[in-house]
Length: 97
Figure (cartoon, rainbow, N blue to C red):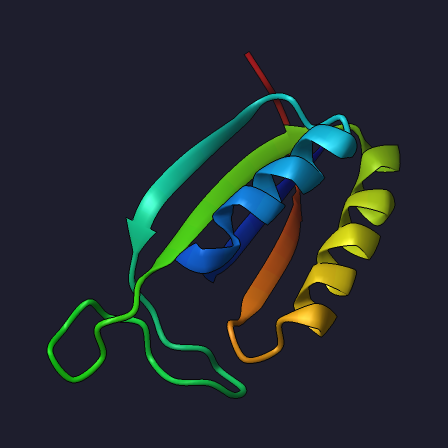
């Protein structure tokens, strides 16, 4: 099993939800409003007067074979919307209950 953590501009929320569904990643937790600053490019999304934009985030736990198709769809979405920003990270899941 893998844990996939996805952060993205709130404007991409509907697209990310469609990608999760089409990738058969049914179980997830959605954080509707999160702030942050990317490590490579882009402006901070902090919800402040100076940086009013906010992000959302999703974490999902899925079978290993679902990760690459999910990442392919996320990469395509990110390529289409480079100015908005999307990042995804994968971790091994040791145990589930």
